[in-house]
Image (cartoon, rainbow, N blue to C red; front, side, top):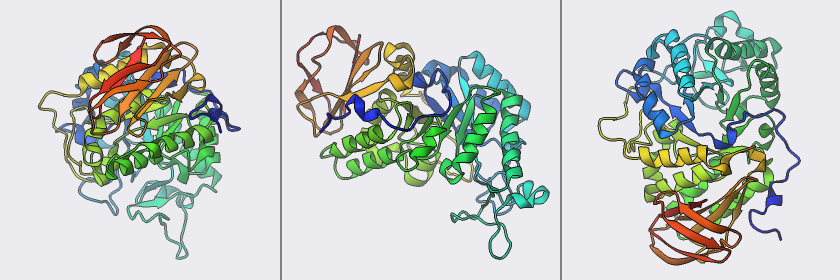
Length: 443
């Protein structure tokens, strides 16, 4: 039986068929819900937050769909972002299209990237293609447009139509050519045939090397990692939620889930770790409803395990309310952003520490022995440049003299959040952990 998280577990016959962006290993992604971000809900008002987000260490801004929303079968007063009426027009709710172009320019000047949400599987019910290209859509037995998944404000596109595919790629090209965006977050990517994503990326990567994030769990759709750089770890999120709901008595289910990801996926897979996003917040609850005190240690894990951490608008406040999805329901920025420094510490560490340098395929996370293995996750993140050690207490109990098998490192190490110093001398280390506490040791 192989050792838990042994390097060989990352070996796979699969591979990503495309060259990944050089910054994938150290990046983070911040989801922007423009409608709810400010009182105005516009690009202009959001722009005032750019310098704060840069200071917090945000690397990639992911904007929920910027396209106009269909009126037919619209939900609520404002409708769903994900029911568009055009792929190449701008939603006037958010301001002027030139303001988006300026925002991308400003973000680039601040060292940040910009990606946009792309909804390829379906459109809104009165999308302009329903008039100009009705053959682009699937029809039911009655000859009507329809959606196969029970969403009554959208209709499905027909990917057997080669002309539709080309028009879709042309629309994606428009946002790259006109606005110099840096990639796409692809909504429900597994509902669109994988050969289309191959076709689209082959074309678009000739224009610019882009970042491709898929809304799908790679354990359920592993072949899509041949195209996408990163994908959602839904199964991990569900496992952590179930563990907390069961009383957080042990973390063995979490280790098993991590082992599943490591065995199945290629070493280049940039798994996307998260505790919240627009769907989770609106429909299933905030991270504090789901996790309580466990939310913060999960954010530490998300930022330090191999992959890409995702952060949703307002998590840094922190936001304790579910945001309405189809109507106005703004975030409250009146008080201090309490978790700004916490996320700044993590995101800046990702940018500056050598353990996050190089290609993602050369990064490995190994389980490290600890004496309270039913509560404590301890692991090392290692590449050819550096090694860091992470210890997380996923329990409500204060733990004393936890034995850690940090036996393969020597020299002076520092703790990320306290700046404490400790000499590692190739022997076991002993630490105390607060309830839901965590420590990160680096040289």
